[in-house]
Image (cartoon, rainbow, N blue to C red; front, side, top):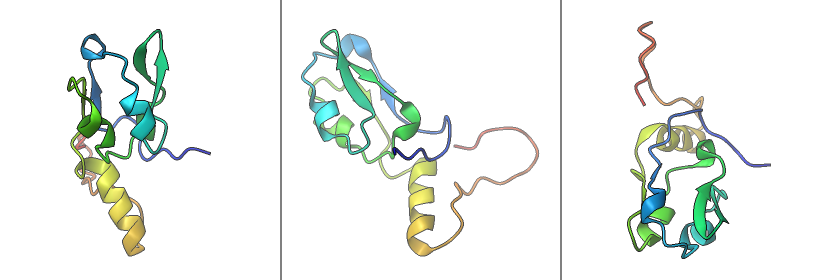
Length: 100
């Protein structure tokens, strides 16, 4: 079973036009966010991204960007490690504005 953190909060960005089909992203991603289709990388489920940055660091054309260690995924992982309730630390101010 694959683990999703929070929906629609990852900083992962992907530019298919820059992709050369080297498959590095699919090889290094620990959560299987990428697979290959028609000689290009394809995002299987963006919400699986834990923002580790492995894909971005290994992409030779910089087709992938992610702010590793920031955002909701990092906060949730930190809270799991420290035994606190998983949260991204967003204030609930009723504004319906996403902080992540």
